[in-house]
Image (cartoon, rainbow, N blue to C red; front, side, top):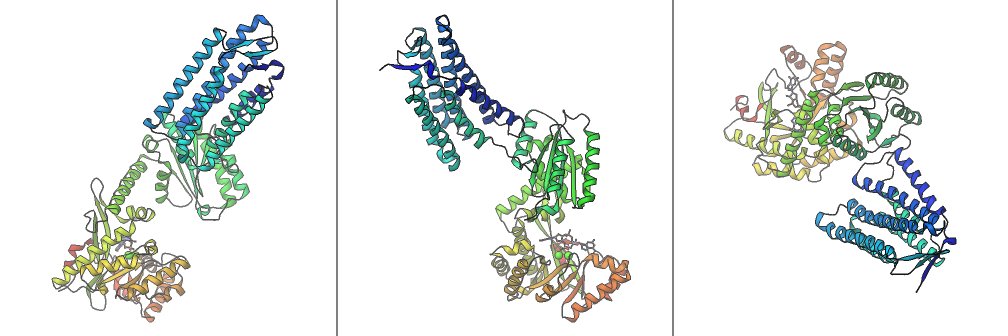
Length: 633
Ligand code: C2E
Ligand code: CA
Ligand code: CA
């Protein structure tokens, strides 16, 4: 069979369109954020090769139709053109292997076959062309005379790619697969149509369609177009890129608590301010949205030598905006820190700083922050380990106890269990440094179980030695009540120790929502049947809902230390506290004052319907074994 391709059927518009669209893509890539991954670099080479391939196709036809004296040059360009198209095939294989993260051993056979195929096809193509056995250029077109290596090479590569896609199909999201298959199907359709018409103008274009699919699916723009922000993964990729290239940068983090809640969206003009902050103060700055109300601006240091003064300008602009909106904010400003970049943990780092920050303040990162972050990172790892081991005797979790003075009997017969951690390298760790971490990461319940177990054990020992222990209270976090096993866990631990339920009290803080309230009511009623008592902790620190409190069968209301201090400071506050305490005791609740430090505190609290007193005046929290010194025989 003799194949012919008529020059009259070729038009350079197909190739030139490909070249121009490639340039459009390059422009878009320059002005959007794209992760500079390996696959993206392969993609960029693909686009460049495609441009050269399309131009070589145009050159070939120009030469071939310019007279017999240009025919050998045209043949050479034709070989170059084939070489480039196979190079694109080879890159397709490398690209698929890269984006699907195939292991070394998995990808090796495919890469070897693709490599051999590439070298073989290109070599045979060149040799055949030189020997005049590939194709012959005539006045009116190409006459394929020999074995048409290009055709066989094309079929072989396409088969290899289909086999490879079949192998990785489970690793790619189905929609992504369909995207690639769809674009390939269109390529084949175009190729077939052009073959049936003896056409040749769209061969390069058929290589282009899968590349468009890659751009769209794999490297598309993750901008939030209204805010001009990129997502958290984008930030991590950028940090990794800067770290690898050893590039310095500054970051400004802005946290607006208000928008962190579900369903709160930023108003139009606030978004406009964000766009203005990002675009108009620094060169090459990128904004990342790392939480609903949390954005971080990254500023390349080398492109902004005068960043200090720009920072002041930005600050002034921000203050102006703040006076318009009055959303509470926390701002953290810093420079790239090697340690944090290596771990790629700027978001957690900034959040750890937020914990110790007041609303509407600006914090400049200091070396001390990094130390503190590393410490809390270490604590978190330990908590994770404690959680995984789930050993109720874990020696790292210490039960301390603070005795409580009973005014009616004039004795110490109760106390509050308080947790400490003893960690190698970190020493004794206090609750403010680990309770929030444990709560955020879901480790709090195990800690409570350990403290409860150690407390029960201690009560059993004290009772056996003949000490009078009415009960010891243990703190419980609201989050724990959501666990369906909560009541079973508490019951099991108390039962195992052999003490009776009424030796234990649980301290709860007020529920903030109706669903929490229902949950609390349900758990309290279940556990009260075992004799367990309930305390309302930290009364006076939040907005109290009296109606809800009255509906729960608490035994003791613990007045927070802030109420004690306030009563001391003003007559008015004192009147309020007195009437609250009076109301509670009339309703048969006992009132306990926390944070009694001085004799004057004690005297004042005694005049305010106190049943129990707790504070440094009597004792600081001590290791629970030392409670023998307070309880009487
Ligand atoms: P809290 O439940 O309000 O515990 C009372 C805190 O007040 C204790 O701090 C105690 O040492 C401190 N305190 C006692 N007397 C005085 C005083 O006279 N003056 C002052 N200024 N402070 C006094 P600690 O042990 O650091 O515990 C802090 C918080 O950590 C506790 O507040 C509680 O919310 C939480 N916590 C402690 N242990 C546990 C636990 O086992 N589980 C849970 N979920 N939370 C715990
Ligand atoms: Ca407490
Ligand atoms: Ca308290």
